[in-house]
Image (cartoon, rainbow, N blue to C red; front, side, top):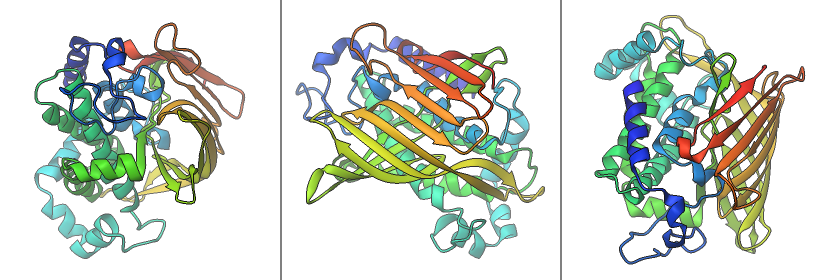
Length: 375
């Protein structure tokens, strides 16, 4: 995992700066290639503002890999997490998946993990598999494929797939949470939905569908290592989905999902900017019901959020959630207010006791940042 971080960092640092060639970069409002040498772009346009200014393999890896920290399943001190033992357990299940599935029962596995045939709070484990792993993971793979192409990295599809799968394995490692035994959740996620998303978005028609009809965008957070404890804060993998109403295209049905499931509306203020609002539930706790096998159950809390984006690149967000630590959560992305100055963003969290965490993100640091936390 640490080796992957090093490789991703070296690849991105060695690549040309996309913002320096902004005039030759594809415009999200007009996806026609800027030059005949560039292929069609669906998700990554190389703009130097908003969430897309932070796009990099490392930004994706950290946000997707450590996404589950929002569920309070493990410490945010990422340098002290038990990667070896949890990763080994996930690895054993991946190498030999059939005993785990047989122990749980193929019927239960297919009903709860694969097909949408169970609807209870403890049985509908398929729900995030379709939204986050299949569609979200597939879209992330396609966007990274375009990122690697634009940065002249050889074998872009291979690196995009490795990035998505490495982040997925890290996420499953953290979700394993000290279980030594069977883990069918990791098998469904990795083998069926993560790999399935990569395969699905290897074709053009899903890329067209989710970039032109039902528009999916990566609105992930701005991760930062914070002092004094070395904790990783403001990390999370999120997506926005917009579908224009046929009778009023400026108004769109809207969903923001990740470690939250929300629905609302989005309104196009002008040809570039949109404002969106939504409400729903945020996952705040992930608890395992068993000590021998992984049977995680998620607890939710009410949440609401508003967003401002420019051509589907998120500029700013404000979220309020009924949870002790991330009660009020604000993000301002690079060049949200002005195109001048360094490409840096800002974020701040206030808990219910008035304690604050805040920091900055820097495009040149591959989307990572630094901060301070008293949470």
